[in-house]
Amino acid sequence: MAERCTYKMFVSWSIYPRILCRSTCKGSLTSWYPVFGALILVLLLVLQLSMSVLLKTDDRPTDNYVQHVVRKLTELEYANLEAKSVSSNRAGSNIIDLCDAFPHALEGKIEPLSLLKTFPEVRPGGFWRPTDCEPRHTVAIVVPYRDRLEHLEIFLKYIHTILFRQKLEYRIFIVEQATGCTFNRGMLMNIGFLEAMKHGNFSCIVFHDVDLLPEMDDNLYSCSVTPKHMSVNIDKFDYRIPYDSLFGGVVAFSKDHFKFINGFANRYFGWGGEDDDIKRRVDNRGLTVIRPPDSVARYSMLKHGAEAGNKANPIRYFEMKRALEVQNVDGLSSMAFNPNMYKVLDTKLMDLYTKITVEIHKIEVLKVLPTLFPIRPRHPWISSKFRKFIAKEKT
Image 1 (tube, one colour):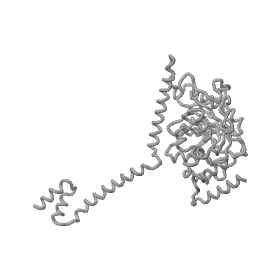
Image 2 (tube, one colour):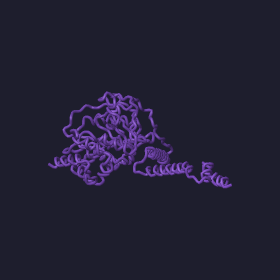
Image 3 (cartoon, one colour):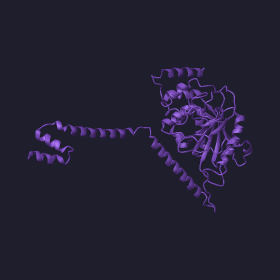
Image 4 (tube, helix red, strand yellow):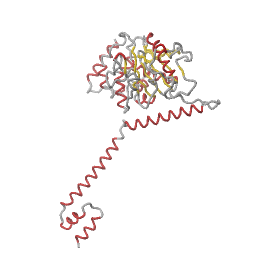
Protein backbone atom coordinates (compact mmCIF):
# COMPACT_ATOMS: atom_id res chain seq x y z
CA MET A 1 0.00 0.00 0.00
CA ALA A 2 2.80 2.39 0.89
CA GLU A 3 4.55 1.62 -2.39
CA ARG A 4 1.42 2.39 -4.41
CA CYS A 5 0.89 5.73 -2.63
CA THR A 6 4.46 6.77 -3.13
CA TYR A 7 4.23 5.95 -6.82
CA LYS A 8 1.12 8.11 -7.25
CA MET A 9 2.76 11.01 -5.46
CA PHE A 10 5.79 11.15 -7.78
CA VAL A 11 4.30 10.09 -11.08
CA SER A 12 2.95 13.57 -11.83
CA TRP A 13 6.37 15.27 -11.98
CA SER A 14 9.17 12.76 -11.94
CA ILE A 15 10.71 11.33 -15.11
CA TYR A 16 11.75 8.32 -13.08
CA PRO A 17 8.55 7.43 -11.14
CA ARG A 18 9.19 3.74 -10.73
CA ILE A 19 12.76 4.22 -9.56
CA LEU A 20 11.69 6.86 -7.07
CA CYS A 21 8.88 4.72 -5.83
CA ARG A 22 11.18 1.78 -5.41
CA SER A 23 13.87 3.84 -3.71
CA THR A 24 11.38 5.54 -1.40
CA CYS A 25 9.92 2.30 -0.28
CA LYS A 26 13.34 0.77 0.31
CA GLY A 27 14.75 3.90 1.98
CA SER A 28 17.71 4.22 -0.46
CA LEU A 29 18.90 7.53 -2.04
CA THR A 30 21.14 6.10 -4.77
CA SER A 31 18.36 6.13 -7.36
CA TRP A 32 17.89 9.90 -6.85
CA TYR A 33 21.14 10.59 -8.72
CA PRO A 34 19.50 10.87 -12.18
CA VAL A 35 17.14 13.50 -10.80
CA PHE A 36 20.02 15.45 -9.29
CA GLY A 37 21.82 15.26 -12.65
CA ALA A 38 18.79 16.55 -14.50
CA LEU A 39 18.43 19.47 -12.07
CA ILE A 40 22.10 20.38 -12.44
CA LEU A 41 21.76 20.27 -16.25
CA VAL A 42 18.81 22.67 -16.07
CA LEU A 43 20.74 25.04 -13.83
CA LEU A 44 23.70 25.02 -16.23
CA LEU A 45 21.43 25.85 -19.18
CA VAL A 46 19.90 28.75 -17.24
CA LEU A 47 23.36 30.02 -16.34
CA GLN A 48 24.51 29.82 -19.95
CA LEU A 49 21.50 31.80 -21.17
CA SER A 50 22.10 34.44 -18.50
CA MET A 51 25.76 34.81 -19.46
CA SER A 52 24.90 35.13 -23.16
CA VAL A 53 22.50 37.97 -22.34
CA LEU A 54 25.12 39.74 -20.23
CA LEU A 55 27.80 39.39 -22.91
CA LYS A 56 25.54 41.03 -25.48
CA THR A 57 25.50 44.22 -23.43
CA ASP A 58 29.15 45.08 -24.13
CA ASP A 59 30.13 48.30 -25.84
CA ARG A 60 30.90 46.72 -29.18
CA PRO A 61 27.74 46.05 -31.20
CA THR A 62 27.36 42.81 -33.09
CA ASP A 63 27.69 42.65 -36.85
CA ASN A 64 23.99 41.88 -37.31
CA TYR A 65 22.97 44.79 -35.11
CA VAL A 66 25.22 47.29 -36.91
CA GLN A 67 24.11 46.13 -40.34
CA HIS A 68 20.48 46.32 -39.25
CA VAL A 69 20.86 49.90 -37.98
CA VAL A 70 22.79 51.04 -41.06
CA ARG A 71 20.25 49.43 -43.37
CA LYS A 72 17.42 51.22 -41.58
CA LEU A 73 19.28 54.54 -41.78
CA THR A 74 19.81 54.04 -45.50
CA GLU A 75 16.14 53.23 -46.05
CA LEU A 76 15.14 56.35 -44.12
CA GLU A 77 17.59 58.43 -46.14
CA TYR A 78 16.11 57.26 -49.44
CA ALA A 79 12.60 57.84 -48.09
CA ASN A 80 13.55 61.41 -47.13
CA LEU A 81 15.01 61.99 -50.57
CA GLU A 82 11.79 60.83 -52.21
CA ALA A 83 9.74 63.08 -49.95
CA LYS A 84 12.09 65.96 -50.69
CA SER A 85 11.82 65.27 -54.42
CA VAL A 86 8.04 65.44 -54.31
CA SER A 87 7.49 68.27 -51.82
CA SER A 88 10.12 70.63 -53.21
CA ASN A 89 8.68 70.49 -56.72
CA ARG A 90 4.92 70.56 -56.12
CA ALA A 91 4.92 74.34 -56.47
CA GLY A 92 5.36 73.89 -60.25
CA SER A 93 3.38 71.84 -62.67
CA ASN A 94 6.15 69.27 -63.13
CA ILE A 95 7.41 66.83 -60.50
CA ILE A 96 11.03 65.80 -60.86
CA ASP A 97 11.71 62.12 -60.25
CA LEU A 98 14.70 60.63 -58.52
CA CYS A 99 17.74 60.09 -60.70
CA ASP A 100 18.36 56.54 -61.81
CA ALA A 101 20.47 54.51 -59.43
CA PHE A 102 22.50 53.44 -62.46
CA PRO A 103 22.23 56.32 -64.98
CA HIS A 104 22.00 55.58 -68.69
CA ALA A 105 24.79 58.06 -69.42
CA LEU A 106 27.41 55.67 -68.06
CA GLU A 107 29.64 54.25 -70.77
CA GLY A 108 31.98 51.96 -68.86
CA LYS A 109 35.62 52.51 -69.77
CA ILE A 110 36.62 56.18 -69.84
CA GLU A 111 38.35 57.31 -73.00
CA PRO A 112 40.60 60.37 -72.54
CA LEU A 113 39.10 61.97 -75.64
CA SER A 114 35.63 61.76 -74.08
CA LEU A 115 36.61 63.88 -71.08
CA LEU A 116 34.96 67.27 -70.83
CA LYS A 117 37.32 70.20 -71.33
CA THR A 118 35.15 72.87 -69.77
CA PHE A 119 32.56 72.73 -67.01
CA PRO A 120 30.35 75.81 -67.30
CA GLU A 121 27.58 74.26 -65.18
CA VAL A 122 29.86 73.81 -62.15
CA ARG A 123 29.35 76.52 -59.57
CA PRO A 124 32.28 78.23 -57.83
CA GLY A 125 33.70 75.90 -55.22
CA GLY A 126 33.25 72.81 -57.39
CA PHE A 127 29.55 72.30 -56.67
CA TRP A 128 27.12 70.70 -59.12
CA ARG A 129 23.77 68.94 -59.08
CA PRO A 130 21.61 67.64 -61.93
CA THR A 131 18.61 69.70 -63.01
CA ASP A 132 16.60 67.00 -64.78
CA CYS A 133 16.23 64.71 -61.76
CA GLU A 134 16.57 64.67 -57.99
CA PRO A 135 19.99 63.22 -57.01
CA ARG A 136 19.99 60.19 -54.76
CA HIS A 137 23.24 61.10 -53.02
CA THR A 138 24.96 64.25 -51.77
CA VAL A 139 28.68 63.58 -51.93
CA ALA A 140 31.75 65.45 -50.71
CA ILE A 141 35.01 64.53 -52.46
CA VAL A 142 37.89 65.21 -50.05
CA VAL A 143 41.42 65.26 -51.50
CA PRO A 144 44.52 65.63 -49.28
CA TYR A 145 46.97 67.71 -51.24
CA ARG A 146 50.33 69.45 -51.40
CA ASP A 147 52.44 70.56 -54.39
CA ARG A 148 50.69 68.44 -57.05
CA LEU A 149 49.28 71.11 -59.38
CA GLU A 150 49.91 69.08 -62.55
CA HIS A 151 48.16 66.07 -61.07
CA LEU A 152 45.30 68.19 -59.77
CA GLU A 153 44.46 69.60 -63.21
CA ILE A 154 44.24 66.10 -64.72
CA PHE A 155 42.30 64.74 -61.75
CA LEU A 156 39.64 67.47 -61.97
CA LYS A 157 38.88 66.66 -65.62
CA TYR A 158 38.34 63.00 -64.81
CA ILE A 159 36.37 63.40 -61.60
CA HIS A 160 33.97 66.09 -62.87
CA THR A 161 33.23 64.11 -66.03
CA ILE A 162 32.43 60.97 -64.05
CA LEU A 163 30.28 62.69 -61.43
CA PHE A 164 28.31 64.40 -64.20
CA ARG A 165 27.52 61.04 -65.73
CA GLN A 166 26.55 59.53 -62.38
CA LYS A 167 23.99 62.29 -61.67
CA LEU A 168 25.26 63.11 -58.20
CA GLU A 169 25.01 66.25 -56.14
CA TYR A 170 28.60 66.85 -55.14
CA ARG A 171 31.30 69.29 -54.12
CA ILE A 172 35.06 68.86 -54.36
CA PHE A 173 37.29 69.90 -51.44
CA ILE A 174 41.05 70.17 -51.94
CA VAL A 175 42.66 70.27 -48.49
CA GLU A 176 46.18 71.62 -48.84
CA GLN A 177 48.71 71.41 -46.04
CA ALA A 178 50.93 74.45 -45.69
CA THR A 179 54.69 73.96 -45.81
CA GLY A 180 56.81 73.72 -42.70
CA CYS A 181 55.47 70.43 -41.33
CA THR A 182 55.69 66.81 -42.36
CA PHE A 183 52.74 65.73 -44.51
CA ASN A 184 49.88 64.21 -42.51
CA ARG A 185 47.41 62.60 -44.91
CA GLY A 186 45.09 61.14 -42.27
CA MET A 187 44.64 64.41 -40.41
CA LEU A 188 44.05 66.32 -43.65
CA MET A 189 41.15 64.00 -44.41
CA ASN A 190 39.72 64.56 -40.93
CA ILE A 191 39.99 68.31 -41.47
CA GLY A 192 38.38 67.94 -44.88
CA PHE A 193 35.46 66.08 -43.33
CA LEU A 194 34.92 68.71 -40.63
CA GLU A 195 35.20 71.62 -43.05
CA ALA A 196 32.96 69.96 -45.65
CA MET A 197 30.19 69.61 -43.08
CA LYS A 198 30.27 73.40 -42.71
CA HIS A 199 29.46 73.81 -46.41
CA GLY A 200 26.62 71.32 -46.74
CA ASN A 201 24.81 68.36 -45.24
CA PHE A 202 26.65 65.67 -47.19
CA SER A 203 25.46 62.12 -46.64
CA CYS A 204 28.53 60.52 -48.24
CA ILE A 205 32.24 61.34 -48.06
CA VAL A 206 34.74 60.00 -50.60
CA PHE A 207 38.40 60.35 -49.63
CA HIS A 208 40.47 60.43 -52.80
CA ASP A 209 44.21 60.55 -53.58
CA VAL A 210 44.95 63.16 -56.23
CA ASP A 211 47.20 60.84 -58.26
CA LEU A 212 44.53 58.15 -58.83
CA LEU A 213 42.39 58.42 -61.96
CA PRO A 214 39.30 56.21 -62.35
CA GLU A 215 39.21 54.17 -65.54
CA MET A 216 35.52 53.16 -65.37
CA ASP A 217 32.61 55.55 -64.99
CA ASP A 218 30.34 52.81 -63.57
CA ASN A 219 32.43 52.73 -60.39
CA LEU A 220 29.77 54.65 -58.46
CA TYR A 221 30.95 57.48 -56.20
CA SER A 222 28.24 56.91 -53.63
CA CYS A 223 28.03 55.25 -50.25
CA SER A 224 26.60 51.87 -49.38
CA VAL A 225 25.37 50.26 -46.17
CA THR A 226 29.01 49.63 -45.25
CA PRO A 227 32.31 51.45 -45.96
CA LYS A 228 33.49 50.96 -49.53
CA HIS A 229 37.00 50.51 -50.94
CA MET A 230 36.85 51.79 -54.51
CA SER A 231 40.45 51.71 -55.78
CA VAL A 232 40.91 47.96 -55.66
CA ASN A 233 42.93 47.41 -58.85
CA ILE A 234 45.64 49.92 -59.80
CA ASP A 235 47.84 49.74 -62.87
CA LYS A 236 50.97 50.24 -60.75
CA PHE A 237 50.28 46.87 -59.09
CA ASP A 238 49.28 45.12 -62.35
CA TYR A 239 45.62 45.54 -61.42
CA ARG A 240 45.94 43.26 -58.43
CA ILE A 241 45.39 44.17 -54.82
CA PRO A 242 48.74 43.98 -52.94
CA TYR A 243 47.19 42.50 -49.79
CA ASP A 244 43.66 41.63 -48.73
CA SER A 245 43.38 44.14 -45.89
CA LEU A 246 44.35 47.12 -48.07
CA PHE A 247 41.98 50.03 -47.51
CA GLY A 248 43.44 53.15 -49.10
CA GLY A 249 43.61 55.26 -52.21
CA VAL A 250 39.88 55.92 -52.72
CA VAL A 251 37.45 55.02 -49.92
CA ALA A 252 33.84 56.02 -49.29
CA PHE A 253 32.12 56.48 -45.92
CA SER A 254 28.69 57.60 -44.95
CA LYS A 255 28.74 60.52 -42.54
CA ASP A 256 27.48 58.34 -39.69
CA HIS A 257 30.02 55.59 -40.35
CA PHE A 258 32.93 58.03 -40.32
CA LYS A 259 31.85 59.48 -36.99
CA PHE A 260 31.23 55.97 -35.66
CA ILE A 261 34.87 54.93 -36.17
CA ASN A 262 36.19 58.33 -34.94
CA GLY A 263 37.70 59.20 -38.32
CA PHE A 264 41.34 58.72 -39.27
CA ALA A 265 44.18 58.68 -36.77
CA ASN A 266 45.97 62.03 -36.49
CA ARG A 267 49.34 60.78 -35.30
CA TYR A 268 50.80 59.48 -38.60
CA PHE A 269 53.26 62.07 -39.90
CA GLY A 270 54.97 61.05 -43.12
CA TRP A 271 54.21 58.23 -45.50
CA GLY A 272 52.40 55.06 -44.42
CA GLY A 273 50.30 53.69 -41.62
CA GLU A 274 47.05 55.67 -41.71
CA ASP A 275 45.33 53.35 -44.21
CA ASP A 276 46.05 50.18 -42.23
CA ASP A 277 45.07 51.99 -39.04
CA ILE A 278 41.62 52.98 -40.31
CA LYS A 279 41.00 49.45 -41.61
CA ARG A 280 41.51 48.21 -38.06
CA ARG A 281 39.13 50.87 -36.80
CA VAL A 282 36.47 49.73 -39.25
CA ASP A 283 36.91 46.08 -38.23
CA ASN A 284 36.91 46.97 -34.54
CA ARG A 285 33.52 48.66 -34.86
CA GLY A 286 32.00 45.55 -36.41
CA LEU A 287 31.68 47.04 -39.90
CA THR A 288 32.59 45.20 -43.07
CA VAL A 289 34.25 46.63 -46.18
CA ILE A 290 32.73 46.06 -49.60
CA ARG A 291 34.54 46.35 -52.93
CA PRO A 292 33.17 46.79 -56.45
CA PRO A 293 33.95 44.04 -58.97
CA ASP A 294 37.52 43.86 -60.23
CA SER A 295 36.41 44.84 -63.71
CA VAL A 296 34.95 48.09 -62.35
CA ALA A 297 37.29 49.19 -59.53
CA ARG A 298 40.19 50.05 -61.85
CA TYR A 299 42.46 53.09 -61.51
CA SER A 300 45.54 54.56 -63.13
CA MET A 301 48.21 56.14 -60.96
CA LEU A 302 49.98 59.28 -62.12
CA LYS A 303 53.73 59.03 -61.82
CA HIS A 304 55.55 61.19 -59.34
CA GLY A 305 58.90 61.24 -57.60
CA ALA A 306 59.74 61.06 -53.92
CA GLU A 307 58.58 64.02 -51.83
CA ALA A 308 60.95 65.70 -49.41
CA GLY A 309 58.14 66.49 -46.97
CA ASN A 310 56.57 63.05 -47.06
CA LYS A 311 59.25 60.60 -46.03
CA ALA A 312 58.34 57.22 -44.56
CA ASN A 313 57.05 57.45 -41.01
CA PRO A 314 59.74 55.79 -38.82
CA ILE A 315 57.31 54.80 -36.05
CA ARG A 316 54.30 53.77 -38.12
CA TYR A 317 54.56 50.09 -37.13
CA PHE A 318 54.75 50.99 -33.44
CA GLU A 319 51.68 53.18 -33.82
CA MET A 320 49.70 50.48 -35.61
CA LYS A 321 50.26 48.07 -32.71
CA ARG A 322 48.21 50.27 -30.41
CA ALA A 323 45.71 51.41 -33.02
CA LEU A 324 42.69 49.90 -31.29
CA GLU A 325 43.72 51.05 -27.83
CA VAL A 326 43.65 54.72 -28.81
CA GLN A 327 40.82 54.61 -31.34
CA ASN A 328 38.37 56.45 -29.10
CA VAL A 329 40.76 59.27 -28.23
CA ASP A 330 42.77 59.84 -31.41
CA GLY A 331 40.81 61.14 -34.37
CA LEU A 332 37.81 63.42 -34.60
CA SER A 333 37.46 63.33 -30.81
CA SER A 334 40.98 64.61 -30.13
CA MET A 335 40.49 67.45 -32.64
CA ALA A 336 37.42 68.51 -30.69
CA PHE A 337 39.37 68.18 -27.43
CA ASN A 338 42.22 70.39 -28.67
CA PRO A 339 41.21 72.86 -31.42
CA ASN A 340 44.82 74.12 -31.53
CA MET A 341 45.92 71.03 -33.44
CA TYR A 342 45.31 72.83 -36.74
CA LYS A 343 44.38 76.20 -38.16
CA VAL A 344 42.51 77.02 -41.35
CA LEU A 345 44.61 79.68 -43.07
CA ASP A 346 42.39 80.28 -46.09
CA THR A 347 39.28 79.02 -47.87
CA LYS A 348 38.86 79.91 -51.55
CA LEU A 349 36.06 79.07 -53.93
CA MET A 350 37.93 78.15 -57.10
CA ASP A 351 36.19 77.48 -60.41
CA LEU A 352 36.25 73.69 -60.04
CA TYR A 353 36.90 73.09 -56.34
CA THR A 354 36.96 74.53 -52.85
CA LYS A 355 40.54 75.06 -51.72
CA ILE A 356 41.15 74.85 -47.97
CA THR A 357 44.68 75.69 -46.84
CA VAL A 358 45.51 74.48 -43.34
CA GLU A 359 48.44 74.57 -40.96
CA ILE A 360 49.00 71.52 -38.79
CA HIS A 361 50.65 72.02 -35.41
CA LYS A 362 52.63 68.86 -34.92
CA ILE A 363 53.51 69.35 -31.26
CA GLU A 364 49.87 69.90 -30.36
CA VAL A 365 48.91 66.71 -32.19
CA LEU A 366 51.54 64.61 -30.45
CA LYS A 367 50.99 65.92 -26.95
CA VAL A 368 47.22 65.52 -26.89
CA LEU A 369 47.35 61.74 -27.03
CA PRO A 370 49.40 61.14 -23.84
CA THR A 371 47.04 63.59 -22.09
CA LEU A 372 43.92 61.66 -23.09
CA PHE A 373 45.42 58.19 -23.06
CA PRO A 374 48.64 57.83 -21.00
CA ILE A 375 51.10 55.31 -22.37
CA ARG A 376 50.99 52.21 -20.22
CA PRO A 377 54.07 50.74 -18.54
CA ARG A 378 53.70 47.56 -20.56
CA HIS A 379 54.54 49.57 -23.68
CA PRO A 380 57.88 51.15 -22.70
CA TRP A 381 59.21 50.98 -26.28
CA ILE A 382 56.39 53.23 -27.53
CA SER A 383 57.00 55.70 -24.73
CA SER A 384 60.69 55.87 -25.56
CA LYS A 385 60.01 56.40 -29.25
CA PHE A 386 57.56 59.17 -28.52
CA ARG A 387 59.96 60.99 -26.20
CA LYS A 388 62.67 60.96 -28.86
CA PHE A 389 60.23 61.93 -31.60
CA ILE A 390 58.82 64.92 -29.71
CA ALA A 391 62.25 66.04 -28.50
CA LYS A 392 63.49 66.01 -32.09
CA GLU A 393 60.57 68.13 -33.27
CA LYS A 394 61.15 70.75 -30.58
CA THR A 395 64.76 71.32 -31.65
